[in-house]
Image (cartoon, rainbow, N blue to C red; front, side, top):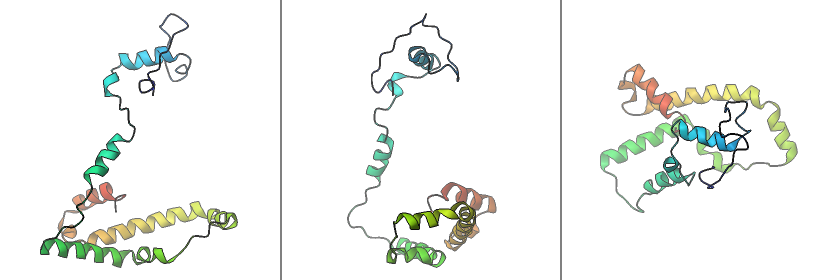
Length: 156
């Protein structure tokens, strides 16, 4: 942030303050100098915090209309079917509304942490079931299946 805001600091001592976890907030000048000494580059600082995310979103824009090959369309249908069979309740979510009254929220919060672990376990089981329904997944080695599940779990 110091670089982004073009901040200019001054040291009130001899420009050689000790910077560690305890003293780091005592002298901003020496703290910034230490950052440069250990390799921070002014040029490497991004000015836009979300620039990387924006670039990714721009790349993901799909054309308004496109045709799928027969094989790709069949694969999309199989993935969609696997999702609907594994998570039927998610497909129905649009039918329900949320009661946002404070009394209702308090009731929801009461058992939240007890339910969280149970829900997480169920979600993991469902994600594994979903993956097993995908064409070709079960033909992979167990190690590869685990690696894919670990790396893509949040995306699913």
